[in-house]
Image (cartoon, rainbow, N blue to C red):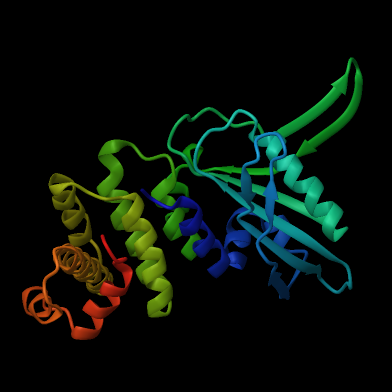
Length: 283
């Protein structure tokens, strides 16, 4: 299963300012960018169900040319939830109580279905008396057109295009365009791998789609083609490595000697020993 929360947290914590630039320019324009710091992950317990919830991302920022700070709370929601707006209010209330700072709450709705607009309000009323009206900023990816982000020189755009409103037949083209945009950004290898891995996770192509993907790449400039093929090659190498590791784990479970496993899989002695450490006794 895909760990959606981890993937989005890695993306947004690495490219936080770029995320704000892309979706919340009115907020980032008021921030001292050098002041941004991520706070420890908060864990809340739902007293009604006993279930523990961890918020995804909490950043403390200082207003430009001011000593006043505020918090930006970003939550990724990968599935529909009837009472989600109420849960966001609970997060807001507990964070406000703990930090006593203004909070800007943001939600990324990253599920594929449904495509109807999600509620971004939580209200408490008595007749005409409005006790509470809580609202958060909402970014619903499946209601955004990936074509609107093609020319955005932003790594978050290159990643999140893969989760926007995409017709089935457009999937190979979108994957090619994500990588084309990524190739123009000239990021460090580690950051390139983060974005390309995100795209590959959410746009896995079948054999027919891969042919369309290759055709789309062939129409691009030579420099872009070369950069994209390096990314694709790294995917293939990573996939082959995972396959070798899975075979080694199976052989370890069967009790084969480490020396035999290294010869069969081509893994180093150290790599097999690291895998062996994951195999608990008696499994």
